[in-house]
Amino acid sequence: MSKLENTLKHQLNDNEAVTYPDFNKMWDRIEKVEDTFQEKISATNVRGGHRARNWRRITIAASLSALLAAAPVYAAIQYDWGNLLSQKHGIQAALEQNLGQPLGQSVTKDGVTLTLHTAIVDENRTVILYSVDVGGKADKEFWKVKGLSLKDEQGNSIEAEYNYEQWDEKQQRYNGYFESDWTPGEGETKVTLTAAAVQSFNQAEQELSLNSNSTEPQTFQLDVEGMKSIEVKPFAKSENKQLFSSAVTFNNPDAKKWAYPQLVAYRGSTRVEPLPEAVFGTPGDNGEYTIKQYFKASEIPDGQTTYKLQYTKLERSISGGWSFDLQLSKKQMESGTIKTALNAPLEAGDTMHSFEKMVITPTQIRVILRAEEQYKQLPYYKYNLEVGGTVLEGYLYLSPDDDPYLITLKFERPAGLVIDEQTDITFVGKYKVTNHDDDKTPLLLKNISAEKQTVIRDTGGYEVKWTYYMQGKDLYVETESDDPHFGGVNQTYIGLGKERIPGRPVTVNFAGDGNNKAIDVYKDFKGTEASIYMFNYTTDEPDKETRVQLRP
Image 1 (cartoon, rainbow, N blue to C red):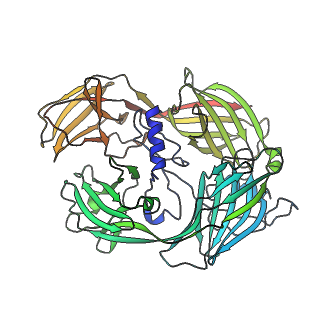
Image 2: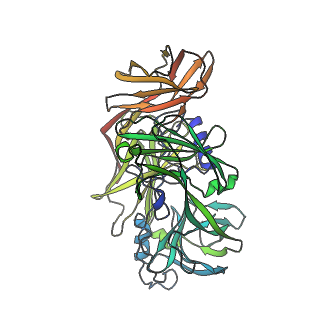
Image 3: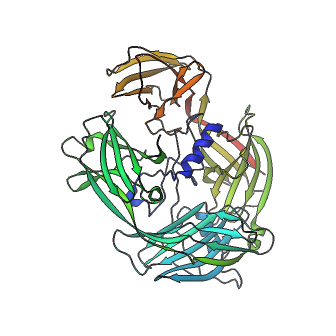
């Protein structure tokens, strides 16, 4: 990953960039993407350098059964956690082994009670399980704990990697967990857990008289929930898919943190579900909140479909006073922790990535690799560990606060998985994506007009179709190939001597997703000719894999 990609990654995070496939369910689960799950937009698996075209979406989901504790110091009291930790098998396993540290602290304010129940602390992470009793809730209402963070004795803040709540219908409360990579040192460590606020939200909709048959941008005044207006641009239908690119202007920037606007479509009273490849919240040229959504064209026929803007409305915010003094220790987990130094390349002939160490705890296995360049992305996009015959699926994590040369792969450790010094552990990387930046030959676009024109160009031995046309004042450039092994053009730019004018991405593209069509737009383009360059392109090898034995 290039320096520019990492900068964009931080910009997206700072501007509350959020990607998710289903707005109605986003408070019941954190978004699923491809075959892995990511943390905090930190797994920036991009199609290539110079632009993050393939933000992977974030995933957390849920289910846990905690057993009645027997150990006198650390055993946690039995609670029904509902369906909170279904993808956090290691936390579930630790609780089943009575490895939870009981907390038992509550704070009540304005009729809402936040209770800390159990801490799970080992060499890899700190997890705190909590509940929120709001006294029942309305049908469309949901509550969130805002800004959970730890602070050590020196006053240093430790932000959550996860902070997630889920409504438990049976218990009539919210179950939640806080997770951080921070772990205490030797012995017990004093920390303070605080929450900025506990907030309630509701969903609302506003009708839009959108003409999806027109490809011209259409602007609608909103003046609701801090949103001033929305501009929606429908794109021409292609392969039974239609793209809508929207930009919301806020007159209250704080509302970006909770409004999560999106376009919704209805046929009669039935809502049409969008396709999952969507991106929400990337900043526009003038600070707009941009949205890219796809629908199946056959499900939104012209004249039979109505459109609305759906958004989240802040109903209530209870701030101040949410503070808990804790003493945390990872001592009970130390006997089940194995650290292994590694020194092996990712694959034969690879001098860019090498395995550096592995940390096995009762809840999780972490495999750390070192790259020769800062934020250099792994070429494989699916990660497994074969542990004594059991296959674990992992996810990649890049933290902006850690060493930029390190890449961490995390694998949840399921209950019953026995690991000792002699256990065979093999890393398996699958689906290789190779980035190419050697093609610097420009493509001359001639006679640019509103008429679509196509040029076939050889790129790395693949036939790539370039289509260009004007819509209003803007130039659009599309690239795609019929060969599935061509991964896609990452980003185009117009060369003007020593200066470059980069195209702005319109489509949503994920490395390794099998979709190589991309669209860039050049706003307010003037002229009838342009020399177009590629920053880079990728090629895909879905069946390629590498195997590296890590233990014994």
